[in-house]
Length: 202
Image 1: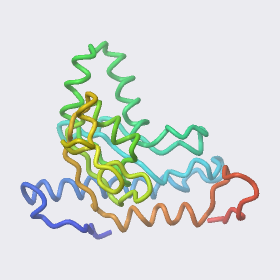
Image 2: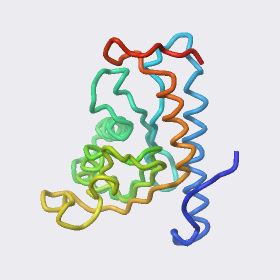
Image 3: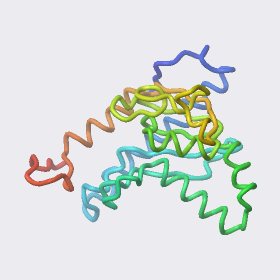
Image 4: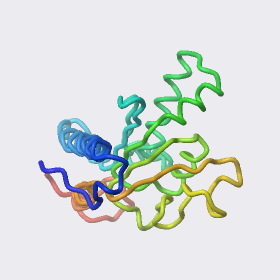
């Protein structure tokens, strides 16, 4: 599949950075596509992975998460929160101090298929994440530019209450990211309130 983006190479420090970012997001998209129906016979449609993210440090993927709100019936279990919790558990096992954990996050990059919502953008600010890259915009709940700009250093950010600003770049492979959402919503959500439209079979 060709790597497409709404961004130009001029948006990044070098063509190498641009290629690395596109390659990373491409891997996320392909991972989503390969997992979506792999276990469709044994997993309910509530476990569709229509949002997924990875956290990268030193050019290595150190954590990943998927949206589990339908699966857990918990509205807070977004892909970003899932990936963050995986890291926190890992670092707790090796007994990192709070100061060490905070320092680790300042060297982390988060890649996600959709713009972080207001909740996730706030969490990333308090954790001190270094940079965020996302695919499609979140025009209903986006916290990184679409509704609020919680990643920026201004009066509307989280800095006044202890958060930190971070660089955020969107529009990377946006069309591919949107197609994942479209496929999910066309099939229907089995956990939606009744009555709802019939669930389509793949």
